[in-house]
Amino acid sequence: MTTRPIPVPPKGAEVKWHLSPPYSARHLLWLVLIVALLLVTGQRTDMDRMVAMTTQAVGNLIGVADDSQVVRGLSRVGTAMWPPVIGEVEEVNRMGDLDRDRLPLFSYIEVQERVEQRMNLETLQLEATTEQVEVLVKPLGYVWTVFVKMIETLEIALWGTLLSVVLSIPLAYFAARNYSANRFTYTAARGFISLLRSVPELIVALFLVLAYGFGPIAGVLALGLHAAGFLGKFYAEDIENADKKPQEALEAIGAGKIKTLWYGVLPQVLPQYIAYTAYIMDRNLRMATVVGLVGAGGIGQELKGRFDMFQYGHVMTILIAIFVFVFLLDQLQARIRARLI
Amino acid sequence: MIRFESLNKVWPDGTHAIRDVSLEVPRGQFCVILGPSGAGKSTLLRAVNGLMQPSSGRVVIDGTELSVKTQSALRRRVAMVHQHFNLTNRMSVAANVLAGLLPTVSTMRAMSGWFRPEHRQKACELLAQVGLSPAHLKRRAGDLSGGQQQRVGIARAFMLDPEVVLADEPVASLDPKISSDILSLIRDAARERNATVLCSLHQVELAREFGDRIVGMRDGQVVFDGSPEAFTDECVESLYHGAVWDDAQPEEDDADSSVDLSTTNVSLI
Image (tube, rainbow over all chains, first blue to last red; front, side):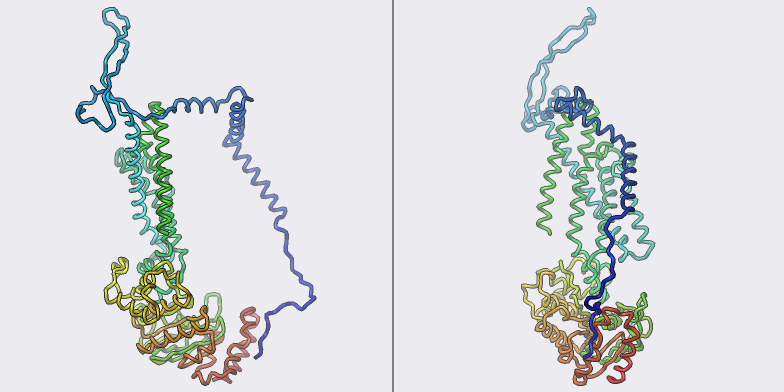
């Protein structure tokens, strides 16, 4: 059997190859350009002032600098926010439908004395009058209000996520190059996905509040539409990058596109899909707290109201609640993911 | 019967994968295609179910020419066993076998996974015939060993009782003992249904053992066509002659090998 070997140079022959060093003068030039660009943009965004103010704040804290604008501002907000508001007190007179035999859980009626300055119309002088006011005290009242609002926020996030999944599945099918019917549907789907993704939730919510009015509808739609842009892109890219082998096997027997997708692609990409959807759920919970700021329901609306009334104690309670909810959801997701994958 | 009529395939990069191949494979034959890497074996097989569109020439299966119109109907009658098994790894063995039915079931039924009882029964019978146990049904296909995966692939291929089975190097990544078992399974299942088998292989010994007929290919051409008895050691030598060099430097060797081939052609056929 005549075989020709793989060609190698004869022994002792000089190998005339050249391996250049990894960096050259051109790289240095690029480095200088990038640093210059960073300096210009840093100056435009006041980064120099940021460094100066932060240094001053640190100096003030360790007792070197006398005064710091940053520390003053922060401590003012900090003292205003502490302690977080937990209870709620309501005047019974103002509650028309209070059933005294069946008070809400943990609450009780208390008589408080109030001193009020009133003008005596005859003498035209201010007189202090003491008044007995019956009030309903709910020791955990505000925490409960925030909890209910937080559940509403969670529901907005959940329905936003469901909506985005339902919207993005057909979008992903048409935005996957190897499954889209033709170039036109592909471009249209990709364009639509980019459009959805390019407008931030807050801005979408702003317009949807005009269309649907205040409340959760605008929030759900805003979150769902924006997240559909995300999921559509990620789902489509996973379909495109999925292992081709099972798809080829099903194509070879003529299974058809949708059935091939269902049996050859979906089981393979499911772990990623779950991961993306979990991320979107997490993101939607955070964004659901924000879209309330423009009136789209949830805890954000409460936050905005309290903030505008300078009730920073209430704001603190809300911020703690948001943190606790995001943290708990994180733990829950980690467990669900561990079980599913 | 499968008939290749002066089939040619030129890839967009100019590689001539198949050069003027004409073959007739009668119904029920186990036809082994042998040849070095890059000889065009896979490409030839793929012409039968339209995974590869030939540049010229045609493929006729039982009097029906393969074309865009007839392709989907023909594909149901042509099964394929793949070198890398091509199972959906994260799906259960049972679902992988039932996927062999997909062209004949409705989309709703396929998506819900609610297959008819007789179809589920058939999947079980086929899995039993390839030597798997009920314990394998619910396991993920990707968790099985290579030999077991290929057996699932065979069960899937026979779900629609094909008339033609294309086996594209079905045992290339398996050890000799399992290779022999796998080829027996394909041969026996095909015989039971009088199905034609086109099987590309690398192992000369297996080709001699299982083939009713051996077709030798080199550089896209058929250079040997005959019974296993006629496929002597000399034929093996000339078939694989210079294969190592071809892999390393194809362009430089092109002219060289075509000269070689013309002489081997004469001596073989």
